Each structure stands twice: as C-alpha cells, then as structure tokens.
Image (cartoon, rainbow, N blue to C red; front, top):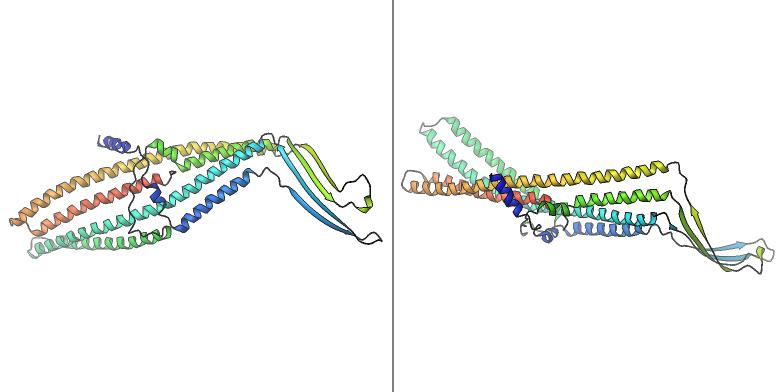
Amino acid sequence: MKASIMRTVLLAAGVSMLSYADELGEILSTKKSMIFDYQMQTNELESDKLSKSWVNPVMLRYNRSFNEQFKSGTIITDNFTVSIDQPIFRSGGIYYAIKYSEALREANDAEIRLQRRMMIADAVTTLFNIHKNRLQQKKMRYQINNDKIDIRQKRDSYNAGLLDSSFLDQAMLKKSQDETTLLELQLGLRAYQQQFTLLSDKDPDTLKLPTLTLVNKKAYKEANLELQRDRQKALEMSHNQKMTWAKYLPTVSVSGQYTDGDINPLFQNPNLKEKYYSYGISVSMPLDINTFDDIEASKVAKLQAEVQVLDREDTVEQEYEWILSNLEILERKIALAREDEKLYENLYEVTSNLAKAGEKTSLDADVMQNTLQIRKLDQKIYAIDKQIELLKLYARMAE
C-alpha cells in the first residue's frame, strides 16, 4: 500500500521537465564545450555536402600545346573548355539521396547531443558525489564519537569486572574500522575532485547543486536521445534502400561543353569556329551481377534498424521503471530516517532529563545526540542519491 502511494506521489511530480537544464549545460569546461560545438558544425557541413553530392562538378580546363612539326616554326595553340556531365533523373535516387543526408544529419546530431548530455551528467554526478562524500565523512565522525563513548563505557564496566574483555575488544575494533572508513572516504573525495577537474573548469565548492524533478514516462520517451537517434537511423536505412534500388534503374544525364581554342593549322577550314558549344543527353542503366544481393542487403539493414527502434522503446520503458523503482526505495529510506529522527529527538530529550536527574550519564545523552545527527545526515545523503538517479534520465534527454 505504501509503495503504491509513493509511486502516485512520484508520478504526480512528473508533469514538469527537468529543472536547471541550462545551468547544467554550463558545467562543462570551455574546451569540452568547444569540442562538441565543432562536432555539431562538422556534422552540419558534412550533411550539407552529402545532400549536394548528386551534383557533379563543373570541369574547367586550360591547355597550351607547342608543335614543332612545321618548318615555319613552333606553332602554339591555346584551348579552354568548360564541361559538365550531370544526371537529372535517377528513378527517384536523387530525391532519396537528399532525404538520406537529412536523416543521417539528424541521427548524428542526436548522437552528439547524447554524448554531450552524458558528459554533463558525469560532471554533475561527480559534483553530487563530492557533496555526498562530505556528508558521509561528517556522519562517520559522529559514528566515531559514539565509538569512543562506547569504548569508554565498556572500559569502565570491564575495570569494574562487570563485562568480559571481548566486548571491549569488539568496541575498539569497531572504532578502528570506522576510522579506516573515514580515511577511505577522504581518499575518495580527492578522486572525485580530480575527476571533476577533467570535465569542468569550475570550482565545485562554489557551484550550486541543481534540483531535478521527475518527468513522466511519455515526456521521457519523446525526449529520449537514444530513441531519436535510432529512429533517424531507421529512416536513414529506409532511404538508403530506395537509393540502392534506384541505382540499378535508368539514369538520364545531360552533358555540355563550351570550348574556346585555337584551330590546329593541320585542320584549317573556314567552317570551323574557335568558340563553340557541344551538348547532348544520355540514358544509362547498369547491369550488375550483384544487383539482387545489394538490394537485399539494404533491405535487411532497413529491417534491422526498424527492429532496433522497437528494442530501444522497450529499453527506454524498462530504464524509466527501474529508476522509478529506485526512487521509491529512496523515498522510503528518507521516510524511515525521518521517523528515526523524531524517535531520537524524543530519546535525546528523555536521556538529557535523566542525566540531569542523575539516572543517566551525559555520555548517554551524547550518544543519542550523535545518532540523531546521523539520521539527519542520512536524509540528505538519500536526497542526493535521488538526484543521481534522476540524472540518469536527464543524461538521455534532449533539451
């Protein structure tokens, strides 16, 4: 019942898009951002070039020749030509070549944006882990204080002959283990800080932690970059199949040439012009033994891309449900920690009053106070864990 209520609360919060999206994009270093900007520009330029690839270049040619065959001396002739041989009809191949380049551009654009979002998410996750690590260190220090109190109490009981030495040994071992954990956390903090500097040139201590909210499943699927990329790839393969088919159908081309050249003395004729045009039209169709295999291969590639889209849709839904399940568990952890906080507040108040009355020691009150602070820190740690889970959605979503 509680899980159902928790899911309803989470889904109710999912009507808005992720907050602070623009701020998150600014976390990357200038060089990292420039790399992605250049990748986007390259993709646009390459796509534009591909969309015009069906247009053959105009060939310019200049030639000067020297002929020493004549006794009168060396004959010099100059020749300048402008020529083009351009297909104007490829049984639909030109149209689908343009559509193919557009789909390819969109697919590459989604992939580049996905890589950028993933890197941003890595940087922000590292930022969250830096803050989480510091909370964990603070929590561990409270725990070590409790360990010290526990050792002191057990040593007094052992000296009074009320407790076996094994209990004191266990308390001392527990303190040593917690101190080791604190050292490991300190090493981990340095690793997170080093990792952050590789992704961002900002100071992590001055950055405000973003607050991300859950989006609903429909919005997540619509903005999912992996799904957008795979859909464009399927469209790309569909256009490629039509291009492949058209490649083996008739092609109509026109050719033309303008010539401005000296007439060779060997061909002196009053009817010849130095400047003239020549043009024509041609129809061609290849007969290739691999035609059928080539067409079938493009068809199979198209079908594979379409199945990939269906598989990606299932994966996106499962990812969303998995993260939603993790968020529900973290919400329950926060709720339990909040209940414990109230419990220890009462226990601390009672123990403090008993300590004033002489029925308890101040150390007992300190234990309750430390444990109370630990449960407060646990809530903050779980809240950061929730944000890290939400980042997994953000990393795959378009702006």
